[in-house]
Amino acid sequence: MTRSNEPVAFEPFSKREKRTRRVLSVQSHVIHGYVGNKAATFPLQYRGWDVDGLNTVQFSNHPGYGHFTGFKSQPSEIYEIMQKGLLEGLQMDYDAVLTGYLPSVESLQVTAKAVGGLCRRKPHISWILDPILGDNGRLYVAEENVPAYKQILRENDVYVVTPNQFEMETLSGVKIDSLQSLRLSFEVFHQEFPRVEKSVVTSLEFPSSANNDQQYIYCACFDTHPASGAMNYFKINKLDAQFSGSGDLFNALLLDFIVPVHKQDAVPLTTVLQRVLLLVDKILRRTLELSVTKKTTSQQSRIIKDLKLIQCAELLHPDRSFDDFEAAARIVEGRLN
Ligand SMILES: Nc1ncnc2c1ncn2[C@@H]1O[C@H](COP(=O)(O)OP(=O)(O)O)[C@@H](O)[C@H]1O
Ligand SMILES: Cc1ncc(COP(=O)(O)O)c(C=O)c1O
Image 1 (cartoon, protein in one colour):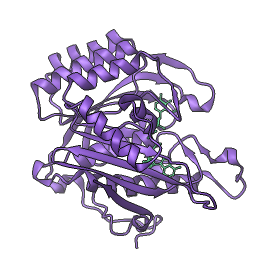
Image 2 (cartoon, protein in one colour):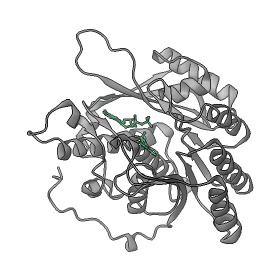
Image 3 (cartoon, rainbow, N blue to C red):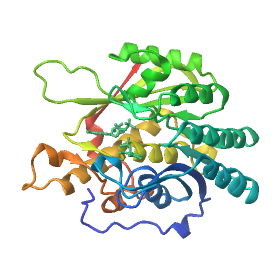
């Protein structure tokens, strides 16, 4: 097995004769730390993508620190840069567009207008949309973003949506407290939004059974193309820590695995998720190892503000095989028809 502190020999990028994929990533930017575009850019670039990062906010650090400074981009600025600058001016072509945190309903609407129009003109572009609304039972954006997202999902060809449990409940109207209700939420969601091709609920927790200290996180998906009618899910051992940026890292890796260099190399959504979850698990474990020392074992120290992405570079290398990821054993896969 490759140890983290041993040098690893990889093929130089130049020798691989691969096409460089291009993504427009519309997300938040922090000067310090790794959330939004800062969490997505390095992994994507390192894995062979040209990343055009459009920053929807520029903050000193993410709000989880308790204090931050910075500013939000205006809707007109976002639209000008995207529509006038990139799409009309440079006539940019992309393999994918990733949309994440948008600071107001107007910025959400102008982004959707530009990206939706682009995807209609160029149907080969994969739109990965994270419908950022909130978490743990509460909204952290304005209430009006809910009907705005619903309208966007109804009117546009979105390739993959990546809500969390609360966002899926909000968009589908189904309370999710079991695998059966999760299955129902997918069904209702795709009836309501038939133009969305694939959906992934990135993290879910169900009430745990008594006398069981190990907590689990679930991740589940539903694919309408090809349509199996089934829900696939993964059960992951939960780490005793809270991470910022893990959802943004998840989306970036999902994008990388689901939009291959060559179409013929496409793999099923379940295989994509297995890879994403293995890699995220590896990165979160190393982040935890490097963040929590023996001297700092308090609960407070288990709130991990920043992913250790740079220290995980060799885990992210595209030539790295998944064979030595002993983490595989910790991820249980299931299916509900
Ligand atoms: N405490 C944790 N233990 C293990 N895995 C985690 C933990 N927190 C996040 N993850 C991983 O990160 C992924 C994204 O989850 P999360 O950060 O909750 O994002 P989101 O809120 O966007 O769903 C999960 O699917 C899981 O693989
Ligand atoms: C502006 C902004 N974007 C993104 C994130 C990261 O969200 P997640 O932890 O779900 O990846 C945060 C988290 O604090 C944030 O404040």
